[in-house]
Structure formats: C-alpha cells, structure tokens
Length: 454
Image (cartoon, rainbow, N blue to C red; front, side, top):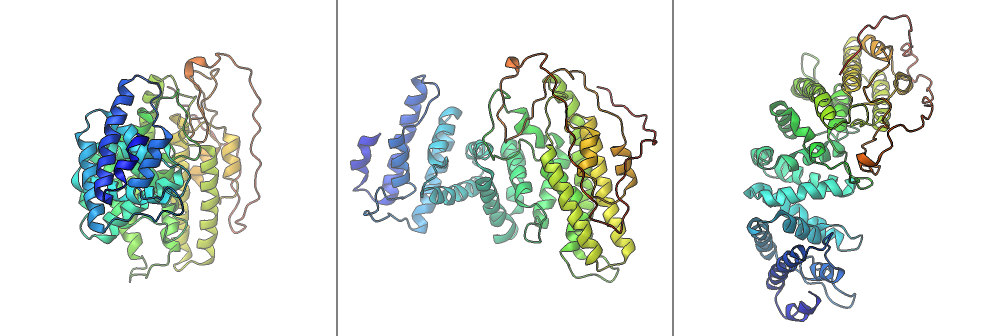
C-alpha cells in the first residue's frame, strides 16, 4: 500500500483518512484470502495509518495535519460504518489491530485518544463489531493502557453526561466479551487505595446488577481463551475475580477512611448506599467461584489452573492490614462500630479464601495462607480457614498451570504426565503490625471435618 501515499497527500485530512480506510479494508481482505499464516500488516501500511489517520507527521520537518472537531466526528462515523459493514471477523480484528495496536512511538497518544472516542461512540450507537474488537484489544494490551480506556468510558458515561449510565449498561447484552473485559479493567483502575480510586456509585450499581443477573459473565474471557496461547506480559487478569474480591473485602474500611460527613445515626451517606451493594456483590462472587469445579473439570484443569493468584492475595492482605491500622488510629465512630467493620472485612476474606480453595480457583497450601494473613488481627472464621484441611485434587500428579497474564502457557498436551516433584518452601511470616489485637495464631487442635470432594 506504500504507493498510494502520493495520491493521499493532496487531499484534505478527512478525505485522505476515508480513502486510506477504504484501501486498508481491501488490503486486509486480500491478505486474509492469500492464506498467509499468520496474516500480518506490513510496516509501510502502519506508517500510512499513523500519517493520515492518526496525523503523526512522517518527519519532523512536516507540519502535523489537524482535524476540526466536526471532521473528527465524521471520521468516527465512517469508521463505525466500516467495521459494521465488514462481515468477516478476521478482517475486522486485523484492521482494528492495524489502527490501534500500540507501537511504542509518539503516535500512541493519538491512537489512545482516537480509540477512546471510537469505543465511546460504539457504545452510544450500538456498534457491536467495534466492541468485540475492543474486547480483544483489552485482552492483549498492557494494563496501563486498558485502564486509560476504562477511565475514558467511565468519565463519558458516569460523570460528563447525566443520565447516560443506561446506555453503558446495555453493553452487557450487546457484547458480553467487552463487558467482561470492561469489568476487569475497572476493577484494576479502582483499587480503593484512595477516594479518587473508589468506583463511582453509578458504576458500582451497574456492575453489581450485571453480575447478579449473569454470574457467568465474569468468566467469559476465560471460557473463550485458548490455553495453548500465551497472555502478554502485564496484560489484564483473565477474569475480574481478583479485583472483585479486593473490592468486597476492602470496601467496609475504605469507605470509612474517605471521611464522608456523618449522618445523625452515625453512619455516612456513602456507607448506607454502598454497604448493601458490596454485600450483594460478595455473594455473587462466591456464587461464581462455586461454578468453577464443573468448568475446570470439563477442561481437565481442576487443581492445575489458578484464577486467583497468591501474589494478588498477598497484596490484598497487606492493604487490608494498613486499612485496619488506619481505622484504629483515625476512627470517627465508636470503637465498637470500627471493630464491626473490621470483622466484616476479615469475614469476607475468610469466606473468599475458603470458597476459592474448595472450588479450585486458588491453589496454595494452608502454610502460605497463614503466612500472608499473619499480620491480620484475630477473626474466628479466618482462624477456621487457616486451620482447615489440606486440599486434595484428583489430578495431583499433573503439573499445575499458573494461568496468569504474567506467564506464558504451553499447550496442555505437551506437558509431561509425571514430573519430578519440587519441595514447596512456605512463605516467611511477618510480625503483627496490630499490637492492640491478638495475632492470627495457628491452632492445631481445632477440629475441621469438612473435606471438599469433586
């Protein structure tokens, strides 16, 4: 396609962009029909995209071409029509990749700006093909950029335009794949470490209703991801389960920390609104975890594939320890209320750990759990979980698959059947950072007859 550059130069910016999209569609169709595997767009074509669609100058001496706001809107409408009219998904995915795959150059900022506007428009006008392509982009791109796209969409539909939340809510039925990836990106963005990183109430309502109506929604990316492929380094998690668990556990203390004005009954307005929502969300997450044994057994992966990673849980317990410490030092309510919220957070942690381990989402030893929970204050339910039985799996001799976005995966068929066993080294314990509470001990005498069987 490099030979069409001279014909594009005399055109105005919108006409040149439209003409290039037309030729790009034909070029990728021919590329797919040629049977070349894998089909790959050449570098000269990518340079044309950067020059005439993203308006990144070919050299420093050439002034950048600029579009007016009206021309940019017209370009977005043309792109929506282009993806909608193309019937082959392979062509659409390659075209989307040619336009928006990050190249590590100065044009990436223009890419992200145009991508945010295109996906936002696709949500508004119901362009499902673009949402499906965006779902794949979110699955393959560095999480930093995925979070940026999620922030643009949240700003557009939850902040800037009042009453537009129902439009965003429709993506659940329009494109479940995009909806799943959007939830993963949002839970990565809003980690409850500060008031600015606390999800807006409208967004929280929407996500809770999605998962309550369809618990399997959060597993769609996992169910459609081939395990023979590898996840790019630093991409989003394959499910939003880790982020949702973090939300439910940290919420009681995180909303207290944000120092909202207290009402006459001692409760803050935010706590009254979000408390039931996070309770509902916590129940839904536990229900999703209980769906996993059948799914993992069907794939032959029960006991081999962890959807919750120990690294993220260790980070969660560390954050929870800090929140507990802050609640003790800066409480604006009675110590009884603070203790109740602290125990609620610890109860949810214990429930999530036990249900995740019993259903194969978390693969670790009780020693590992005791190590990462050693700095937390005593909680009866958590004590029972930490003193529970060793988890047994039917295929214990099969090597585990750490299905993490930070590790490559080999095809299952190529794995050896009986590898040499490597002794496990438990994580080191940490001294308690809460001297006012008793440390979380390991009581060997507590009976715990329950042993899950699958």
